[in-house]
Image (tube, rainbow, N blue to C red):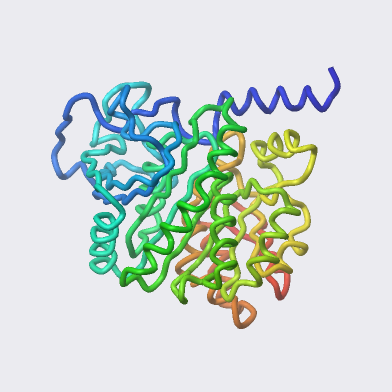
Length: 387
């Protein structure tokens, strides 16, 4: 056996052990109701959902499973976050045990919408009531429906996002052996994400922010590319911040996508890391071609109109170093909201104050000394962070 395939097997084993998502369970709803005092609950989040998954029939507690649907389904999931929650973590029950709302994230209710118009009315009302902003999260490879719901809940809660969270859940199999199936599912979901973004743009929303992770960045870039082809690349001025975390996209393909899209009015933000082991396996499976998420030439892709944050020196919360964007959600908030990036970088170079704030924020997020390299279309910034 040559060294290349030894590496593939080692990384495949690591994926099987850790995965890109949470525990190996896909039940979202509890078997029985578990009640706790209201004082044990930090918050309840309404997570709106557009999905290309089929509704689960074998085990309704999954709500939606890993099979593909040719149409988009719509729902809302109410999720409680316990007072004991730690920033960056997703506290979950093990195996098929019931969630304890006092200790774990718990889905308390699911509402299904009959069609797109019902969903648009409901999500539009929520947007109008909660700050006229929407955050669309597109999950990555090996995610069950529950994984996406809980991850977006964690992001919205930890970043104190001032708007409506919307999960776009494409039909990942939720299996470590399902890489090719997931890639085909991602391709099949492009039109559905495009339609969902157009639907949101027709509400009274003022800004549609997008955070996409891993293989979900492929779905996102393809949807944005399709919007550009139709002459509506910024959703009539409503496209906000686009954050691509650990992009599982071939570098050359990404460049072609960006060429077709054109340089964004607000530079997209890319979070990459040279020690991302999940993307290393993806690269090996793709003929040893680099992925954007672990690419070593940030200036090369920054020239297409993106801001690149190299998080290689920041420790991840899992063995694969594939979810740093959510392990340190304060970073996402700094890049996407508090510093108003990428909008703040669109017309001028970052100010020294912005750089200092970013350094302090990253230091608080990682709790240690590290060096973060920010590559913009204008210049390269090296930020020393300290806990």
